[in-house]
Length: 333
Image (cartoon, rainbow, N blue to C red):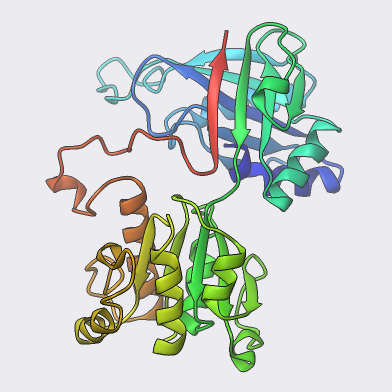
């Protein structure tokens, strides 16, 4: 998706280096990456992103670098098994992929995408599927030009991950949540905690009581709240506010004994039956990083309607069939 590679695209543009994009616009079978998956490569040979998880990237990179060298943009068809020797077994996901190879969009489209991602605003991005493969953007798909077949990606507002408690675990959660495309907000009323300097620049750190912040910033079903402070005065207020609203994941850090006490305190809270505690999947880890991974793994499972079991023991498709939080893509004919 564009969001995944855009920091790379924007950094090279600001340095004056051209970038080519390869975008998965269609396929005739299963695959590891969704439609809209994007690979970006720059004039200096560096690249980011993937279209298949590794099967066709070599072929696609050659085509993208040809465009950087002055070749015409084009739509190519590639197959994960086409470079195999006759006696080698083709991968199960060997369906044909259709990939659009173009230069990265110029301004004003580049600027519109950069601003929308920086400000977390909705933006529809369209690229035509016939020469000259023109780009366009609009605040919503209905306002885009309709002049032939096109591929449209809708950049959505990132779902929030609200962390009640400016702790060392919150700092690690904030780092790991970045590639999950979550907007992290750390809320804590204690001045010494919010000014610790431990938190990445990608997180918003707010000095406030969490229930007051949630009241002023209503949550949606895509949002998540995790209490981390170990201080009931902070955690309970955060949990009561979150459980009373539509947040899809509300969880609390702590031992089973601590959670039993918490449930007694929150017995009269609206929506208390939705409270998850102790937060996280059973990974058995003790470090802060393992605890953060455990919580984010559970959040991903809940978001995708899964129970977090081992893949080898499951029967569902590995990739949940849902629109990703960061964007929705479609091929319009």
